[in-house]
Length: 566
Image (cartoon, rainbow, N blue to C red; front, side):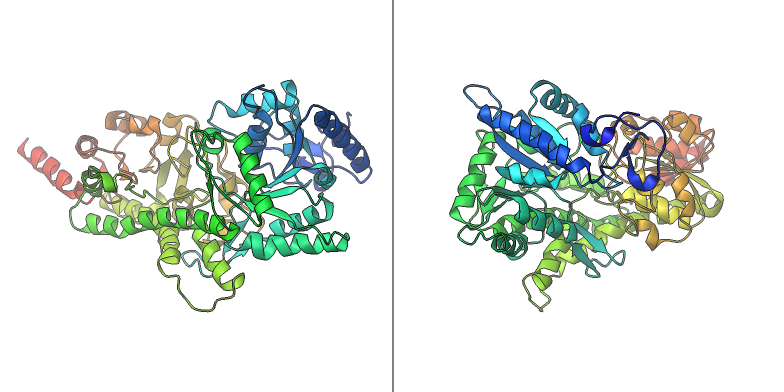
């Protein structure tokens, strides 16, 4: 058996103790490094760093090679001098060697992106940097930090909710970030720039990171040097412009002192397209941190605002889709978005919570100034539950009940034409229907697995699954994404159009009913069905309901009158 531990590029061939291996999504497993592997790994890294510095390149360590870090590492490793077109940086992607995440290291060292992406740029960029340019490697060793000129921190900082629909009953989980900062302070050169790219509670850079690293410096006898800390949040978006959302997009940054600010501006100017997308440099990191929280809270609030008007529309014969389209003609309101079954994604469902938590915990205020921000999160978190009520009511109109019915969910991801299920509203639809005793079949053309369901005992972390908010969830570990639409729709009682995936937009009612084998309850969560399609479903004997689609009853009555005439 080849040793995968130090070279990190060969999988084991027979299954060892699961406590000592990391299993990647395709089932391949890798032995975790042992204590004796660390010295050899550091020698490998030191040799590479020395060779790269001889070529005039600085060493960048990216801590955390997940959704953001892996692509950020690739973008930095792929950056070149604008005149000579030579690589500027040598990048070490660093991942803690846990059973959950260690597999990302051997993947990267093969030149394989450890994140799935619809963007055709991701895979060739990682392969090019690892195998052709030789400007990117991955490691499990924290000693890599001692070689760094720049450290980019992309360690996850989550907001854990204790109650569904009450964000104030929760807290920011910054323990992993704090642990990483401690190690950084123990390892880095005092001249090393530490760039926190993670979305963090406002005040983290100045009130958490600075004292941690300052104290670590003091223990090392480094008293005359101030830590060079900076913050610059990413605005990364999944989909076909994944790389561009990092490299070709506006950035906000700040440093804890003038030297840190100069260094972060120089670094970001090297690796990002600042000619077309200029940097915005703020005075203090707390401003940069607040910028990300306000930006996402604003978006979340607009989406939550439309929820109440969606309910109003359903009860008063209004088609909110048409109303929104009419409003968007006015240029000042052109970015109005219908919220669908929930906002999802990693940022919008939690970022406002980071701000509320920081105000009380890091900054020490006791007054309750936050009202709109937490309420918006609570509304968005529970909006999907209304979809299950529409399913229930539509089935009742057909003489059926959820507990004795099969529902097909079309779309598991949180937004159209991507394979990202993080905090998707679709997850709550499945969980609530399952709690009610229903059987749910799932189709999504962009997904192979739905880890939030399949691995709910350990994903996103043990004890943090949304399964804890519902009963009767045990069977969801057997969930499998159906890849054939005809198979997913066969003999179903209800169809939930949950995501505006392009393939669903093109479906005709006749084809859907034919694949089902007869009439069914049709629920439109996102304005996917126009009036002609709604009318046709009624003509085919289906029942139709939709979020914000209060006018559907008028269409139903019109079809009924037509049938009566004939």
